[in-house]
Image (cartoon, rainbow, N blue to C red; front, top):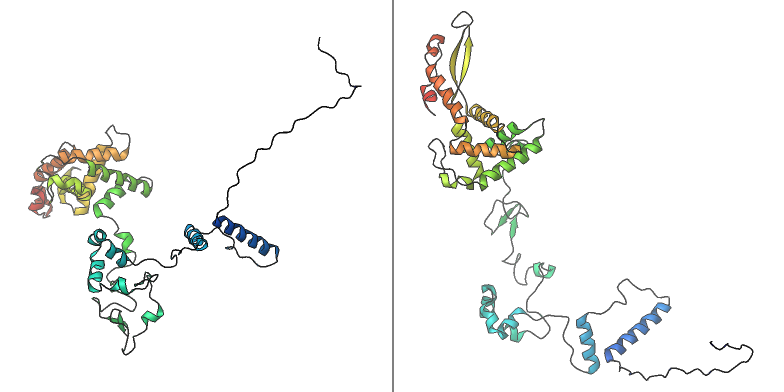
Length: 357
């Protein structure tokens, strides 16, 4: 059984204190002493009701610290106010001189004593992009500005390649008279691209149609070159068509576009029967018919997106496998057989437009 503690009898307990281990003291460097003095001066300045700016009391830069340490040790501090000219560095380093630009090489070759005559701590050239007002003033004994500056006579500049430029202009202002109002909006895109985009548009959503047109042109650009097809009309080599998707699209639509359309003329044969008559089409009408055929054939494809369906149909037209070629041949065959009906109506149609492709 544990002994009981008697609280009536008081005993003195001895407590041992923790031994104190002497710590090593690090000798403060001259720079730390300088910082302590600076901090003390800042505290005194802060205690006094003097004004302190927002940039006062900041930590100095590394180069400033190195200069302060060298000054305390009695050594020569580095010159942190001015840099070393590039010409002096290149003259000391021959390997760098060989790889230097030709402008610096010519400068050193013309003035080899630039680095020797330049005092230490000053530049022999100006690194500023702007010229001071003293440099822009004419030199003593000379009239007018320096020869390397532009001279103006009224509104014309003298001494440059473009004398017709206006005041403060290096190049002439373009003539905007031939351009009408908002011409940049009306003729912004290629006419074929604009016509296909308008045909793709539904419910007035032009931005969506333009995105689909962008996907279609990208599919034409990344597709392989079509096989040799004699019906494909283009002035470019067939192998280079994917490199120019706009020319590729134009060649596809112009090749499958019909030259004529069949119009039914009523009341000519009598008895309510209509007579088929071939009518030539203009370029924009031909392209419109070809675009409608391609879009109608693209609706039957299995691709999910409209842009993919139209792009696949355009590639099939370029390869000669689309049903648009059959529609074109059917229209031309009907137009050739209906040429005799033009005599009865007294109309004349160019045979070249009917026979040609």
